[in-house]
Structure formats: structure tokens, C-alpha cells
Image (tube, rainbow, N blue to C red):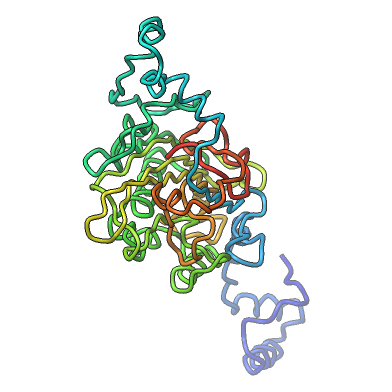
Amino acid sequence: MDDKPSDKPSVSDAEWAAFVEAAREQGLGTEEQEKALRKARPPKPPKAPKRSKQPKRQEPAGWRTGPAWQEMNGRAARRRRVKAVVGITLAVALALIAVRPQLVTGVLPDGVTSALPSSWTDHPEDATPLAAETAPPTAAPEYVDPDRPTLKEPFRGSPALRWADGAAGIELPAAKATGWMSKAQVESALKRSKDFLVAANLDPAVLRGGKPERALGLLDPRQPDLVSGMEKALARPSERNDPTLLFSRFSPAEVRPVGTVVKVRGRMSVENGKGADAGQVLIHTDYTFVYPVAKAGPGAASVARTVVRRQITFSLADPARFEATPGRLGVSAWDSNVGNDDCDGPEDGYFHPTFTEDRYADPAAPEPSGPAVDPYDRSKDLDELPSACGTVTRI
């Protein structure tokens, strides 16, 4: 096979000239010279096989779609924090009477009371634990005995009385291979998602206003602005930079937790991302946390409850396709609703529960206003709730 004209000789010019001169002395022609030269040249090394082009890794679509961490996902990060003042609307009061008529039977004549159905006069509070939630409920929980909570019974009169305690309320679905992840990888991701929810919403130190170090450590540092944005919100909280969007925190100077139990109810699911989320495995979480608190001052006996529902979608991006850190969680969407958090409270990175006696201490105080919201109602998606400050129907 003839060499291509562009091929470089594998011998130097001096060696070439020496071969040509030797060929002339031996009386060889041009063709004989070329053959002699080819024998002297070492064989060319084989060409290295061409490497297949690997797709350039980039950030998942939902990780940088806005100018700041608050707008990291314009499709789903609604960031709505619905605050609510303490109050019971007339409609809700009538509903309470319908399911708990003994509130008014004490003022009815004996003959009228004896004629009422037994269900109207005998309605003990049921504390039987509920089965785990595996699908969206179809209605809000029934109204139960509206007796006020106490230091010994902080969940009295609350549907949460039958909910699981703390981390036991975050049950994981059965893991199976999904998208780019194996069954074992999905199982690990589910556990990390639960770890985040526990660290962000149940850690006693965090509830008392501490920094959620464990929760922050589970987030992917490669997700632009998320961790740094939360660090900024924790250091300098404001209406725009509010750490309670992801973390449950109370000011220790204002309130203290009652007991060690936080009631939890919700569910978790896994799906393979499609469209803009292609190449990601998504873990959807929807949980409600009920926090009983009392005032921080000595001798405080009144108990209030703050009810926080969070919907968070964690994303596990394929490291072969995206700039993601294996073993860390991305966050592609979140939403929250907070029941019994003072609408006029300071934006200092804490929840500010309102107590009943404070509400009625000032006779000139305006009546609660705004749309009525049942913070225990898990039958509606959070985007169906009003975004304005509303009135909780029960706490």
C-alpha cells in the first residue's frame, strides 16, 4: 500500500539522504530506493480508537430557572406561607355543635335534653391510632371534643391525637428500581429524604431555634443558591429570606415546646421524572406536623398548637448526565401552610403562635378576618388554599 503524500517519513532527513546515496552506489533506481526505504522504516503505530463523545453534564432544568433560590423552580416552587390568626368562624362553630352538641345541651330544658339522640350527649374522644396514610384523604378529619389542650394533654381536642408520634409518622414506601436508580439506590434516597424531614421538622434543637446543620448537610451543594440561600436566611432572616420555608423553628425567648412529642401524618411516593425532569428520580413528600407550645415565661400553663403542612419534592439527578453530588438531595419544589402563626409577627426566622387568652385580652381587638382554613385538612392540595393571611378554624 502506497504511503499518502501527507504522511511524514519515520526517518530523519539525514538518514534519508544516506539511504539515497547508498542506493545510487548500488545502482538502484527510484522504485528500488523506495522499497529499500520502506524496509528501513519502522511500522506506523496503530491509530488510537476514537472516543465516543460523552454528553456534557449540566444542571437539572429545575435547579436554575430563577435569579435566586426562592425562584429556583418557577414551575412548582410556590413558596407560599399561609399565616393564620386564632379564631373560630360562625360556620365552624355550628359544625362543632353538630358533632358535639353537649356544648349547648347544658342550657336546654331537661325534657329537651332527654329527647336528643345518644350520639349528641355521649361522644368520647377516640385515641385509637390511625393506620398509615397511603393515599390522599377524601375529606377533612371530623371535629372532635373542642376542649382546650393542657400541659398534660397537649393534643386534647385535636385530630392529631390519633396521629403517629414524631419520626414514626414518616413511613417509607416499598422501594423499587426507578429511572436511573436501582432498588437499593431508591431505598437509600427514601431514607435520606426521611432524615431531612426529621432533621428539619423534629430535631429538638432546631425547634428551639437552633441551626439545622444536619438537614443542610443532606442537601446537594451543587444546587445553585439553595444551601447558600438557606444559610443567608438563617443568618439574616427576612420576609424574602425566610428559613421557616423549609425548617420548623420557634423563638426560645417566646415559647417552649410542651412535652417531647410532635404529631406527624403524611405520605411519600417515588416517580421517574419526565419532560423537564427527565434524568431525575423524584421523591414527593406531603406531611403535616403539629407542635404544642406554651409561653416561655415561668408558670405559663396555656397551650397553643401550630400546625405546619409541607409538600417537598426531592430530586435525585443522574450523575452521569448532570452536575449532581451522589448521596445528596436536590430540591425541585416546595410549598407550605402554617396554621396559627401571627400574621403581624416579626420576620425573624421563627413561627409566632397566638394564644387564646391574648386574643380576648383586649376587648377592642378587631375580630379575626380572612378566609377560613382548616390546618388539619389534608384532602386539598396546598395550591388550593388561599395565599392571603386567613383564619384557622381549629388548632
